[in-house]
Length: 462
Ligand SMILES: Cc1cc2nc3c(=O)[nH]c(=O)nc-3n(C[C@H](O)[C@H](O)[C@H](O)COP(=O)(O)OP(=O)(O)OC[C@H]3O[C@@H](n4cnc5c(N)ncnc54)[C@H](O)[C@@H]3O)c2cc1C
Image 1 (cartoon, rainbow, N blue to C red):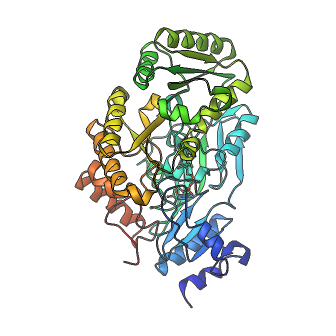
Image 2 (image 1 turned 90 degrees about the vertical axis):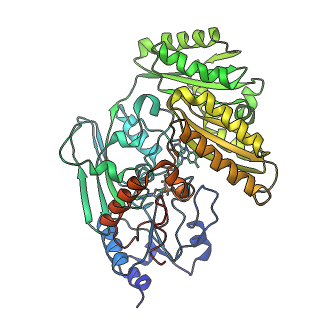
């Protein structure tokens, strides 16, 4: 009996998709990246940690590659199966196991949708800050695997800053119980952090303990438009130098703003800055008013202060809809997520423009300006096949430029497949060799998400 058939013995038939459902297999063969779908041999839907343990052990014994999958919202091909792999989906491991109000902690299964986790915490006056734009459909397990960020990272940090501990299953070491239940711990090496951001290459994340904060009483935002992207970017540093500490500082250049500004915002032009302040109810309003006045003095052509929750929702819909609006405004768009030191952002924007011109492409950039994290898009009004060499060249130049400014290949989306081959541009041979050594220890047969993150570490079948 083949290893694939043996796997079927461990689960109820309702927890398995196989070749009898080719269309569904195809659906689980893709994510939100530009990579073509690769149908897996099987998709498994375990519901308990013990089933995950059995699956990993059997796959390890039979050298079957595993592609872990949360909600499939990743942008880098991380959840696109490698050839002949099985997909292990966590979508049925979607329970909140414990919400500890006194200690500000939550324990969850990996398939819980991030927005639902945040809402459950908020009902108890608690706050889970990381807020990827995909929070309504991405899973917390996927967030931990990618160390997801979001607009609030500027003030509150990214997913890693909230993971107290986790259970994970690695082929080489079995069930790992990592971290602690306490708010602080410096006991031993920080293996929890090693798993956070490992993109499914070191093990399956099976259960997560997260830290929560008291929920801010109030949040209010200012939306400002500037004649140029450089002007709005300059305001980011100005606000910080003036000791404002917003929960979010979001930026969009003129082209991204134009694509997203529909309906109510149609008449506004230029580059956009969205600033959110949260905190105690008695201080937020005056701080937001000050920020609005400051932005006006710094050259904003229009400044809108949210007056109620409807305004607040619309401001954020505008920002969260930016990626989709850009995608719909052209035939071909390739977006990459880079991060540079905050004081190099204006230079980076000039570089993006020059790279686009150099390759006869258009461009649009938006992102989490408080962190220097920019989502740069190269755009063409022709199908990808007709501009692929220009796009590939532009992306290479983009990464080289970001790295030359002391930046990094990814601020939040991760490496996956799309940036794997660029890793040597950022990491020294020694660093890559150490990372491969860690991978070997936890996954000696390279069955966990092979071909992702680390170059020259392709499939376990090669
Ligand atoms: C419109 C849009 C907006 C986005 N905005 C943001 C944003 O603001 N910030 C941001 O950081 N990202 C953003 N993303 C990217 C994406 O949503 C995040 O990377 C998210 O964390 C992926 O979660 P997921 O559950 O969909 O994971 P998947 O796409 O299913 O998987 C992502 C990676 O994690 C691995 N993985 C998933 N679950 C597990 C597990 N239990 N154990 C081990 N490995 C696992 C997979 O193998 C894969 O490598 C956005 C995506 C879209 C489409």
